[in-house]
Each structure stands twice: as C-alpha cells, then as structure tokens.
Length: 160
Ligand code: THU
Picture (tube, rainbow, N blue to C red):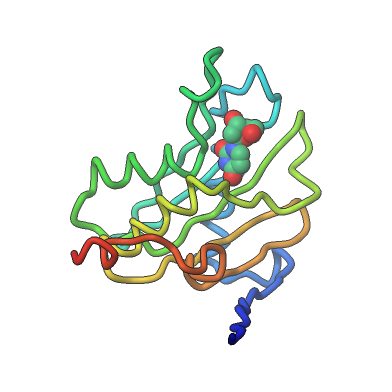
C-alpha cells in the first residue's frame, strides 16, 4: 500500500493588498451581487471573470422554484464568457456572497459543479485561472483549479 498526500497553496490577502487588476475584478463581483435572483436562499452571489483581452464579464446566481434549474454566479459568468468570447482565455475569476447589505464574513467557495466548469475552462484555453475567493475582509488567492479540485476529470480522461 502507499499513501499520497495532497496539498494546496492558498495566499490569503486583505483587500488592500490586492493588485489593481485583482481589485477591479473583485469590485465587479461585488457589484454583480445586485443582479442576483435568490428569493429562495436569500444568499446573493456575484462573480466576475477577467478575460485576456481586458474585458470583465459578471454573473450572479439565478434561482428557480424548481431548485436544480437555477444556476450559480460563477457558471453564469463563465458560460456567458464562453458563449460570447469563445476564443479569449479566462485569466481571473472572483466570487463573493452578500446577505442584505453585508458581504459574506466567510469567503465564498465554489460548489462542485462550478469547480468542474472552471476545470473545463482551464482545459479549453490551456492556462490556469487565478481564483479570488472573497469575504468582506479577506481574499483567498488561488493559482488554478487544481488546488480546489484535485484529480479533476478533464478532457485527457477522454483522450482529448
Ligand atoms: N451559489 C453560487 O452562486 N455560487 C457559489 O459559489 C455557492 C452557491 C448560489 C447557489 C444558490 O443560488 C445559492 O448560492 C445558495 O446555495
């Protein structure tokens, strides 16, 4: 028998420690919480994606009375980016939650399905995405989905 150990490197910054480019993506994610349609959870989520051409795309969670038909903020943003800028790689992704007027006290961490979609997005463009998981005070800066989705299922498993 053998054991392997998995580790992940996560840099924890305060908001003021971010670069200007990171700040602009985080700011866009914060604004995007206003577009959240979340009457069932009352948990607003905003996401923003910075593309390689400098464009920032935002998304928010869109819920549905038939719960599984809703979509998370990250996938709303990533699918819009993929559909409208199919040839432009995604460089950064910021996520933040809000309840009422308060941004989350804990960083907003993507669900398993969103991790899988981020994984596909990295594979699609062949480059890691910097992921910025935000709370009201801190940002977890993660260089690529591997840290959040070790052993991810991707195109190589299908010999693609
Ligand atoms: N949600 C997101 O939009 N992104 C996340 O990273 C976590 C969860 C949404 C889905 C649902 O609308 C609400 O938050 C509560 O689960």
